[in-house]
Length: 499
Image 1: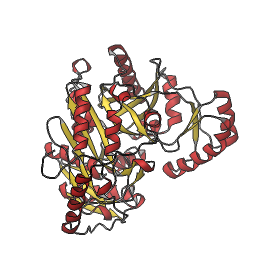
Image 2: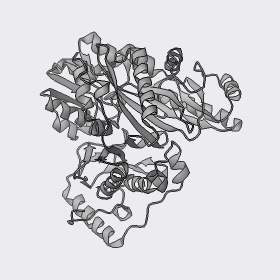
Image 3: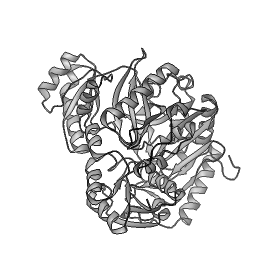
């Protein structure tokens, strides 16, 4: 490959482009009008504006993306994660136009993208799945009967996609009708399909996923697990590896099952097989994410494999050089997702101008970021700002390193979840490794930030005021909303002392 178009934005677009640069591969960025000054646009060798800010008119427009790839002579398209990353139509169009799609084949993606069909396939392959419906439905009456037979609590899920969209826990019959109706509306809006299905809800499970990498020559390996149990609104915010819940025997069993899942559907390229692990040590297939994951850096940290480069090599037709028997985990890694959001207000997104950014740095610290001082956080996209990753020899050392890194992370102008992440990692239950998907509602249901020191807040206010005057107005055209006041900042960053 000589040139790759990266069909994404923000930190993941930069991550892919950096891998391409190290492989001497030219890159083409695509961007919406509000991302004109974004870092991925500046970093790429070429950049093309493909439309206005709404995703359907830019990052989700297959015709524009494929047309740009053809116009610029790109050999391949890398979709990153989100947007079109799991859309089989993009993969089909690439094949039709003679462009390499850096991801799985459209057929495997389509099968895995339909949660009901993938359940059926795994049952046939004798992969353990959560008890639930064998087909989706939009008939509220039929769904209610299924729920009664299954027994409460049940989990409602969208058949056409994941990511927590169209998902609800229903604990009693009285909530059924309203929940089914809202789930179908949300599923329709997110995936264009209001079909939903029911699963038996497992109380206090752990969310364990296994990274896989498969080539086009029949070779498949897993690169061990990531625990993603710390979630808000079914979205992961803290991930770590190894998991405290797995011993060697269970790790080998789950890893072998993940490889079997990939082989069953003829999967190629990088992907993630997700499981739920109950309190009795039984695990169940959940889904396959047919793309590189947001949390892939922690696997890279403990295994020493560049997954994006691996994706590109596999898509180029190369055989995997990795052998399962040679792969090992070393040390412990934790990732925190930094979002522009308000944890005090149900994690509501916080758009606006970022007045000042200072990223953590030091041994064992990696920050994959798409922001800079003076940039705008638009209202049109997922509010993730960056991914903060740390590595150390032990879990406790990694936890302490992450807390210190979060405390030194300065982002002024919008609200972020950094203090919430600190309090999560400092919680005794997290220190003990007693995590599960209900961790946040159980331990931090009414979280409030601590009172910040008045001297430091005055410093923050003065710095923000000065930066507001110095920073030129953004030309992105993104919608402005009220900026977060530095007087409310809870992190312990300092000006000029290096902490």
